[in-house]
Image (cartoon, rainbow over all chains, first blue to last red; front, side):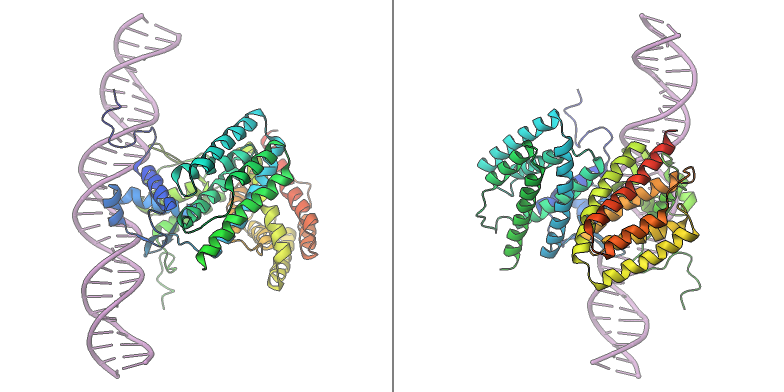
Length: 225
Length: 225
DNA sequence: AAGGGAGAGATTGTCGATAAAATGAAGTAC
DNA sequence: GTACTTCATTTTATCGACAATCTCTCCCTT
């Protein structure tokens, strides 16, 4: 009896600041808000129909997340994209992910194995039917890589990993399209999940490292023609 | 000519939201704001003499940092301390720090070696003259461990590391005092910096892992008598 | 051409009003 | 006595107007 008149997400415990955060995040990651773009409060108010106070709170959170740059008395901008920063980000991501992967492979139980199989199946489907840059593919990719490490046993390691993955996703989504890839991503994903299910930590780490590095090199070559 | 009448930090580009963030952070880490304590805006306004809007923005940032819990329509609280979470945190911290340490040892140049020597000297002094929990010791400790990994070559890895270190510091500062330690922290620190300067990555990683793990176990034994 | 404002425009912060939600205390039915 | 309502109180979240502060540009003086 309450499903008809719901002008905004009626999720329990949600505030306008939360909604603004989640929408801005989505739009920045998808490239809808361009890197370097100034985020003027007045404009955002019109765009999102949300008042200044919740918007400012959301922008502060996003600046802690690394998606937005806040400069005192000079407002907010979408964090710029920089090939060197993506290299840096990739290095950090590989470092964190390798450790998480080793821990997950060492400690994961049956539930984890099940989620790995499930995510691999959906990833294979997405690799066949869609391509990088689409919402569907990106979501499958996010879920796939997260499933591999989800049993690492540390919520904090996962939280850190998720943050880095989010930043990397923005780089990929914005840069993709101009990249004519010769890679077989389906094969790479399959190899990773095979190694994970075989509990071969060293191979899984090596493959994942290569997987992320290749993406980084690919985007680098696009940025510097 | 502007150093006399400065009621608030006159640092360029600083806003009240920044000041509120930094003060709240300091007070939470030092244990001045107790774990689990409710952070009512009205009360904080009186305490810090800052309006509601900048305070809310600061609290949102702190919630992204992990020091504050924000629950929609139920306000903000200082993140609680939980021995299990500290174990989790320590695991994540060790994972990140090991990778950063390996990278720094592999890539560090002369400047880095110099900063390691300098930080070790000051750490040794602090280990002799102060004890864990004091501002002086904690600052030396923070600088010491950061110096070891500062040449890792990834700003993002450092940023993540700093965030975890900050959270861990709060656990240590709040829990210390009740702990009657039998450790020789000076010796542990010396061993670490020796291994680092000898470019012995494996030993340095092993010693750092043990160093952090011992702290975690010590605090665990305090929490469950 | 360098330096120093003046002033326009943005950003940040304050305050009070109001809406929305959670809390807690009675009260009521069973 | 327990569980469920109701209702007043308190807390939180949001808005909108205004004030204060800062930034940046442009123009003027020297």
